[in-house]
Length: 156
Ligand SMILES: CC(C)(COP(=O)(O)OP(=O)(O)OC[C@H]1O[C@@H](n2cnc3c(N)ncnc32)[C@H](O)[C@@H]1OP(=O)(O)O)[C@@H](O)C(=O)NCCC(=O)NCCS
Image (cartoon, rainbow, N blue to C red; front, side, top):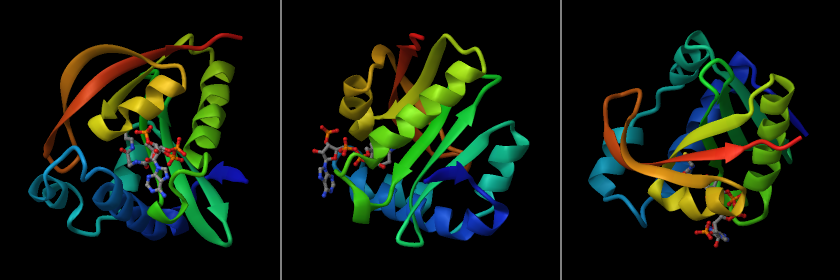
């Protein structure tokens, strides 16, 4: 089941975020950069996301958060999608992205954008996104990550 995240989820979401980045982004970023980005627990990052206009969704499996996704309808932007390393490679990211596509379509979005981390580029390409340009993405805590701007045309 995928549902809207509640404030009481933020600590567990922060753990998923940090574990996912450490386990799954290491093949494309050096450890020093990853630790500068996610080295410290900071569940309040999600309060800021919501204040910035994002909606957060979680997928819960076995009473644990397996994945979360973040959508900003106004900016037509998929802001983040993180799968717990315990559940990686099981199609959970695809399930979440399809859920976010439906939410975006329902809100009238025709083209959804993402700033993809380098490690996730294949995943987004497999799920309908097309590369637009190389980019630098600045995280909430000011770390600059090489990224790829991508777009997906949402067909009805
Ligand atoms: C990108 C991501 C959301 C994909 O979710 P997923 O549910 O694991 O997706 P898939 O099942 O399609 O597998 C994705 C990749 O993991 C690999 N994989 C398979 N089993 C795996 C395992 N047990 N552990 C780690 N990776 C595994 C797959 O080979 C695949 O690689 P590819 O995309 O380079 O082809 C997830 O890898 C993730 O959270 N990454 C870290 C956070 C991130 O970069 N998010 C995007 C921010 S914009």
